[in-house]
Each structure stands twice: as structure tokens, then as C-alpha cells.
Image (tube, rainbow over all chains, first blue to last red):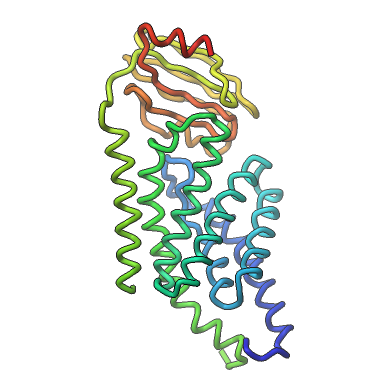
Length: 174
Length: 120
């Protein structure tokens, strides 16, 4: 990716990851294990955003993340859902970007922080919409614990994928 | 995993524990259920009388059932029905939220102070 001529490779990778993020978010909803708490989910789509953050830069990851949220919102859910997703998505990507910049944390740490920020952002919007801070106390603990678990899983996946995708971008054969 | 990653995971878990303990301390049984839609309290119901009520929200409805001093949502119009899957609530401050319908069901202390809540 240091090669400036590889614009087409970059565009292709953007498209692939946007498509992947979009469909992963949908596939995730089909997983039959339902946890009876709003907001607890694996966050596969966040994995794609994390990949972009590490493969390219903050603007690329932000653009793909916003596109994914708006597209999946209109395709699969409602306007309200877009509001929640945007709050979560923006919090998450900002925190992941900042933590990555500090160079203190590995991919898994950044992923956990992103998941926690995502859930915190959604809770903030929920608390604002509902006009009640109770929601923070009652959903916060579960959502934070789940963020550590899902964040770790996604982090491991991204850590494994990164060297392979970097290879593809460099033009290595698969 | 880097050492810092572990510290970060630990910090998030510690934050969760703090919130949990804060929520647990001073938890008492409530006697009143307040229902709010879009942040406005629309109705209150006594936990001591068994009843079923239909709550109209922003996009649909959910059915609140009060039975044996505990409240739960037994039916909802939203596709995921996450509110239906939540366990019954009876302690002060406990909440069931139905985000698509913007319905919030909260257990209140009841007694004298519930008049303030209703008057708001």
C-alpha cells in the first residue's frame, strides 16, 4: 500500500470491505443465539472497520463505516436504528483511531475499546431518547462485559486477517 | 495480546463492576410501575394488582403484564422482541426498554413520592 500506483487495489479493497461489512452486519442478525439484552451482538461489521483503520487510514475507515451504517439502516432496519448505529459507530471509530495512534495497544486492545465505546455511545443515545439515566446503570454492566468478549473475538480475527490482506495489497499471490 | 490490552480489558470490566455495584446498592422493592414513551411518563400502574395493559409507543405497541408483584413485557410489535425476552422486574429503578417503540418501563418506589412522578 506504499505504492502510490495501487489506487485500483485500494478501491477494490474498499469495495470488498464495505460489501463485507454490510453483509456481515446482516448475517450477524441471523445467528440464532439471541441474548435478551438490547445491543449485545458480535460486531462483525466493526471488524471490517478495524481492518480499514489498520490497512489504510482514519478517513477511509470513517467513510466506509458511515456508508455501511446508512446503507444497512435503509436496507435492513429503520431510521431509529440508523441513529443508534451512527452514535455507536462514530464513538467506536474515534476511540479506536485515538488508541491506535498512541501505539500503546495491540489490535485486540483497540478492538475491545472500540466495542466498549460503541456500546457506550448507543447507551448515551438511548438515555437521551428515553430521558432516563437509569438505562445506563441497568444495561451498562452487561454491555461493557459483552464488549470485552466480542471485542476480543473480533480483535483476534482482525489480527489474523491483517497480514494476509497486507500481502494481497502488496500484490503477493494468494 | 499485549500487556496493555489486558490492562484495558481489565479496566472495562472494572467499570462494568462499578456500575453494577452502584445499581445494586440501596436496591429496594418498588411498588409502582411507570411507563414512559419518548421520555414522557404516560401512565403508572400499581405492582400489587395483577393486570395486563397495552402500551402504544412510537412505532407500535407492547403488552405489559403485572403478575405476583412483578412486571414483564409479554408481547411486542417489534421484530426482535428483545423486551419480551427480558426477565421480570420488581426492584426500584429496574427497567425494561423497548427501543423501537421508545417505551421505557421502570419500577418506582411508589408511596408518597409517586405523585411527583405523575405530576411531571
